[in-house]
Image (cartoon, rainbow, N blue to C red; front, side):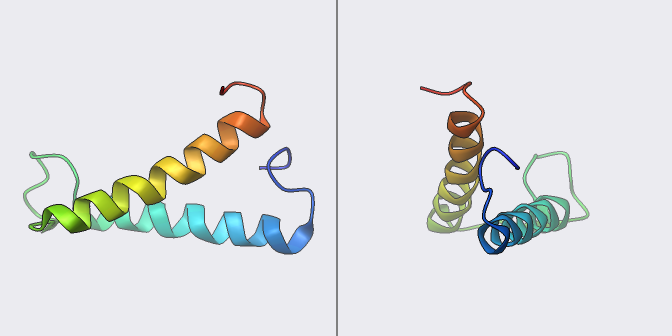
Amino acid sequence: MDKAAAEPNYRALLETEAGELTKIGNSFMIRHTETTKTPITESGHTDYLFHRMFAIVRLLLRKSGRGG
């Protein structure tokens, strides 16, 4: 995270986003075997979550020199 955001306020934003994405991953049925979690039944919701996760992963990889 340090490479992705040296500015403290933006770093805090990324930390919050990572925490929220972790909470979503732990609460919703991301994998088919997680039958005790809340299912995501609309494809638009799946797309939204995918793009949200993709954006932070892409940023972190690019800033760490591991993404194109």
